[in-house]
Length: 316
Image (cartoon, rainbow, N blue to C red; front, side):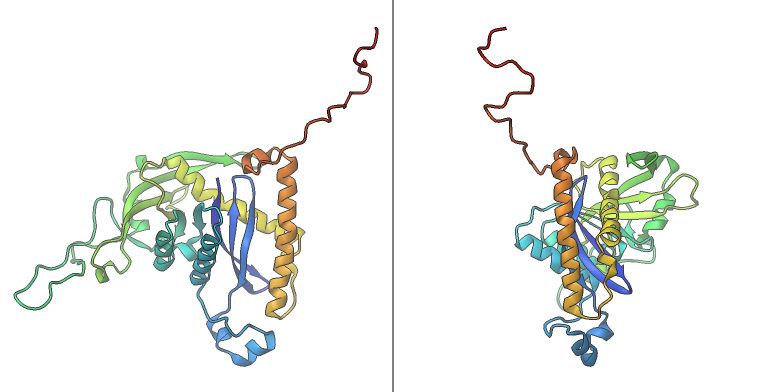
């Protein structure tokens, strides 16, 4: 299994947007770029002082992320399910861009995001009048409105939430209560001629909490089980774990320069070193089978004879 994950990391007040590839056992960044706020990108003296390349223009973090993913697809990197947190998942253009690339995703969304309840969608366009072009845009009425994902989750019966265990933690199995339903996103669909496609809404409501705590949208297939949805949604932990090691053990978070090129050179060296470390771990540990790296150990030489073994043809 391979996933692609978006991670926005803050290093000493610098935010980098990165793309990682991951198996069930390990991950590695394959793209890493500094995010420039709009005021920075449009400040010529600052750009000159920090040697920001002329071709670098302001882009939102989801725009940078989608550009990185497009580059990975163009480079024929093995495709996986795209995972991202709510900072990216809430962006409709980001999700639509993944769909255009024919990539499946499981992305976090905010509790305020609006969707149509299961089985519902916006109303069709108004009937054609006697004159003018036929109306094309979808409609809403006072009594036919989308709801927030939080409202939807709170309206579900308690029996809709099932306890799911998704992996072993350091000292216990990790489990929580989840529910999943099929919905359509509602963002600006009144400006469209067709509704958004139906997809999964996954909700987590831990036992003892007053309300749900996390939400995801996913384009995984209709026959995907709840446990499989949860396991994929929760797999971003491995990227977070590996980034902590990158920062603390390999120095990714220790850059103190003020230069665009220096920042990216520092990150490249740290990631290259971590790539070597990941390869060695997979080579010499049981996780090689999980990571599917297919390293093979050579067999013994034809003339090899264990110490103390009798020689062939020698009398007893």
